Image 1 (cartoon, rainbow, N blue to C red):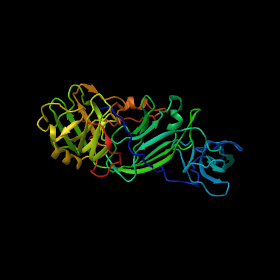
Image 2: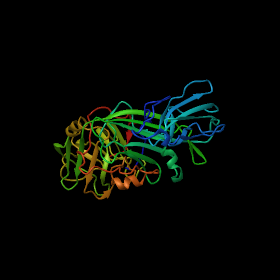
Image 3: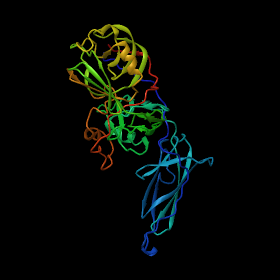
Image 4: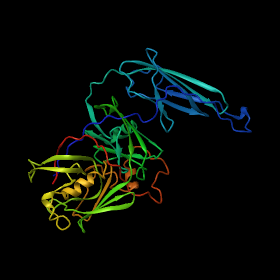
Length: 419
């Protein structure tokens, strides 16, 4: 039952439009004499002549009495390296991982309150390719998809990230939404997964751009990051599933309106279904549940299966239990539907839809699936390894619960556990 398997590794997309060179004119406040305005002060890192800079190196900037108005980065062959600013203004991030044992030059200009400009130039060399083992990262957010409004951006790590290295890793994970809907990252306590979500569910129609820029990142003293991945996808319309053990019914809600109630059979007392807020992780028209090697071994082919947990809890068609659906729990932990109802539901749901189960014998465990919504926003924000922006909190009157447009899903491997 609790057999974990990984989804297909997915490539991802840049978090912000590349910018290699930019300039703006200074803003003058009406009525303020030019002589009263301070001249800009600018410091840039890496320092001139620095060697063995990681290939994840960035151009750090500290400005007083002004702002950065132009950045130009070139390699040792004179080619321009595109870069994008951090939202907090602390630096510029190259849009691709730098190459090993190469020399780069950054020229940064700041414009001050006085209207005067100052330019700093620094040249640095990157370190040789690391021989340290890479921590394998998996980004569960594919490009060119339509996801449900509860879809968290999830990055998983094998082995897990130690607590002291999580801030460095988190600084290399970028999410940009259009229209803007800021959120934060939050780590599972063992460091095996980190989730990104906003305080509220994604608005339908939102475009989400993700970059997991970990290639060559030093992680602790013994490891490095494995890859630089990017993806851009959209959020569909609102769908949610509510499953009540007391009534043995599933309510299917779209755009705030009840579409249908479907009878279900949940996990029997010896293998109960988890109660909590889950997210549909993958969808299969056909798959095989194979639990050989467990305490309750079996092999069964199923149709219309939708994964909810790493441990093997699915919603799926179960014609063998149709007589029990709506009355008795007989499954190995899955949510059983009739063949007809399971087929209909597959056309309604999307990866990233919220599924709420209540009234069963056990609670959903942290990290058993994408559990970003199974805690309050306050608890979620505490899991960030970096400061969370002030004032970031749920709206007083939250939009209807999440969902999506039916369509494609990630391409997971076919084997699975369930029941």
